[in-house]
Image 1 (cartoon, rainbow, N blue to C red):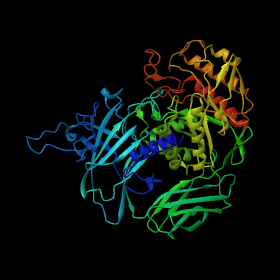
Image 2: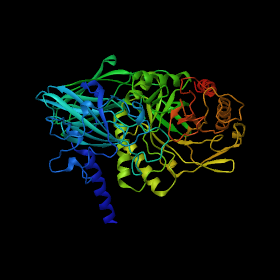
Image 3: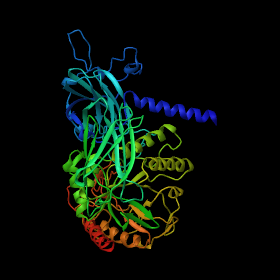
Image 4: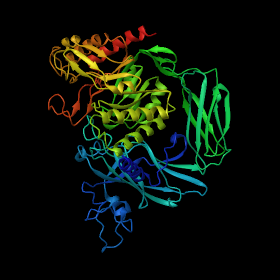
Length: 609
């Protein structure tokens, strides 16, 4: 047993070290700092054999004695005798943020390695710190600055950064990223998913200039169970004890100054009785200033409480029904990941038109801007990590990866009032190793943030016409949330859906995380003809009838707002690499089922006023 524990520790330390190099903990609210955007046109080289990383003996160039020899050297031929078999300057360009699959036709289905390079000019100042920040790179990123390796990051949907203080040149610099979106069994997510595996630098890239001692992290929110006691946490990097940090909300005439401890941290509570609480009906955000001797960080933060009591979900002490819809980080009208605020606002506005007060951002962390827009627009959020289907439950490195992605998500979005649920996974098959893996993730989430709910899309099984939920993970989380596909994968016609009943073990609020069926927008037939809008419409009507029999039903997020691309969906007529379960087609047209759900949500809004 001691040998096994030691081996697990070594594996996890090795994993951490391989991710590390000069990587530092993720900075809070980088958008409010002094930043140089490195978005725009990047040159790229497709490298399926990884010639730019390995020599002909398959040894990494960056681990050789010289540390050079790879594409990251960004060399150009200086005389006619020199042999260099790559050239970024003459290579094609793609937009960053952006994935390669949607920007080059030959790369539509490509999974593998692509090198991306951006040159930028900077004049670094003494007495300043510099960070290079990536909003996300899918999936594994090797990052180099001026031919020197900064580090490695795994995980395609969370931010990371590297300290480049002292590594920047005065003048032109070369930033090179080797992005690899190869699916692997032991990664998070694993090889088997149901969405397009968009590769590349899919979110913003910034160079941040900071004071030597800067505010790396902060949190301001109501403590659990209170509507007037605020907790303020902050962390100054490279600070001595006794440094002052002030939190101010000018609208409330609130200003509190605290001093750091020996680790540069602040952890304080104070009461304030005049807060207007955030809700979908009143998405109140306060302008907040976090000030140190060298910085003044501006944010917009809302305050609210969320808890469960018996079968109820209480927002600010009031029982609510979560009128939701699931969403992928993809615009059906424009291939690729959501890139602009306009893309994201459009998706959330469609949810608002359906009278949603809640969205499930599946199955991975979405863009930070999406969550900030949810704050502004008054939409509650289920935020999820891609622990999806058949994960390698017994691999310590896989667990460490999942834990890190969950941690990064919570650290990034902990100040967003809209986020009420941390989801630790989706449709994971029952086993003892899975229960241990997922239970530990739930414990991690609560340890990082005890003010929000923890959930997952649990497993169900059927005995005849009874849908049974007794997944032991249900003991560890706050909601009875699960997916069911009566009328689609479970056979039968839409009219037969209502024969099902439920046997649910837990006395907790029930939130249906998925149900639905495919419809090709514009294809019309009778309600028993699969792929027709009428079939989907009837399915939704009968699903609502069936689900309304659950006394503890307190919300749902049907699958899904819009059609989305997926290589799993191969019917040449009805799918053609599209999952057609969307209530809005790939052309932006609302299908008939959209209005069924809209009508139901109008009724539930009246019921829960």
